[in-house]
Length: 252
Image (cartoon, rainbow, N blue to C red; front, side):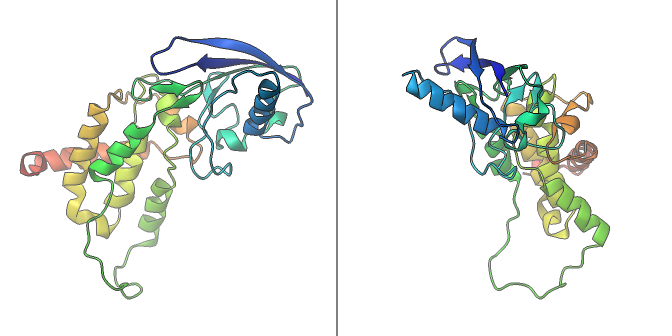
């Protein structure tokens, strides 16, 4: 297979960027999108050119590192998968493919297709955890959790923090990410003691990072490789209103 690529190149955060045209040939349809970029980089290195910088780690759809905007869609045209899971057979032979980084003020470009997503880490650090005294493991079933609640919490916990929701949202909102992290703890009894303080601090940090507000476009849910539901955003809003009503903002 042969492809014509338009790839965003940017030398650094404060440097201007532009699209550069490349052509790759002899691409197996079973290659992942990242393997295709690897082959292009090998070609560039042989030609003494600077290889294209992009993020990757597990290449198994687990870590959420490999976020790219491909033909205007976060992670590409195949739903429910990350960029590393996207195969070249999902594109017609001879197609022109545009590749660019996730676009958001809170995700500054480091180089080429690599962006700084540490804003998401700071949201987690603000309250996405449970403070408990360490000790021996509790007895099995000592904290009963209804099955449907456990499953809903696990669905929210499936978020891998890739940032596709931010890239897909016209407002560059991180509401789906933040809501998923709030939901997975708010649903479980272990997360209840800190639930009010948690939601206040995480939402405040999300706003401080410069993410936009959610206006219910639903693009985040469509782009999420793990299918995180926007019902979590509704839960986050309920948790926030509950915390404000109970005076958590003033008490923290």
